[in-house]
Length: 419
Image (cartoon, rainbow, N blue to C red; front, top):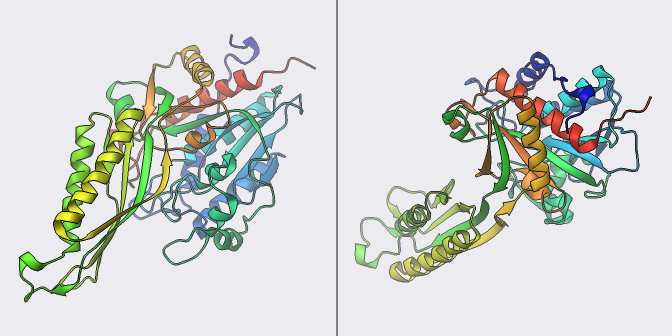
């Protein structure tokens, strides 16, 4: 049941919005978006801003060896595991103002609102910034949360390299966020992550809150097609081992497989690099990324198997070699029904229209859910657009999501009635 002493408590919507606009300047682009790649100078600046804000409020700040930042407000019972909130500060190369950082800033707003209201919780509250959720600079994504739960070894994560050959470990040291805390040593009783939907459903149905109960499985590959370079003018079509044409057929096969597992199946090739990149040379090699997603385990498994079969068929027919190297996967998952029910109750008590949803995107909550009871809150974004400089959300919706976050964590942490 909602606690009578906090039933009407609300966050400061204008302050939350001001913080969103302030932090958007760290990596702000001419088109109104944000380019804040993980562990970059822009990431350092926004991290410094967050830590300074936390320290000014007297919260404990911890940083672990993968650079996750933990901001903790004490509870009446220090023996209880903290209830966590949080998301990420990094963006895509052409990202927006809300993806990830909304969940961090809303968590900060929750802590500051409780301070101003003089409200103590039984369990501590911990705001987390997870390192490298996006995976845009260092693959795989969700790196900080995957290390936290033990899915990725710390040493392997620190050794990941970006396109320039810089390792995660080197980048952490360069920006001053190579912490000493052991990832995973800090335990949580539950976690709630607030995020923009990154899709069109809430807006289309005129709803304010998505209670996220599940997430699609994801499979990421690094791929390569190897053929043979040859002269574009003198090599007959019948004798070519053209890596690009084979890749084109492979790309269409990936699209066909995703469409065959509609409506929830999706497949994407986001990067492709053709070598040697000469106008009059038949391409000898194509390196590319490939991913599939589906919320149903059976469909998800079939998509992967069908892609393997297509790769073998194309390789044989075109006399090329096709390599699909699986670099990261997440099986379809269900979030905690209890945490999801707590979120739904918080939305209903605020009179906010909501629906249950499955996340098509990966989030840090997806990794954390394997070790901590977890669920997510979605709020609408304009036209469902995200990973785009045009990404947009309203003050009203952001505030509504933050208020649902506030009352969800209050219910999970317990409100103290001691003097």
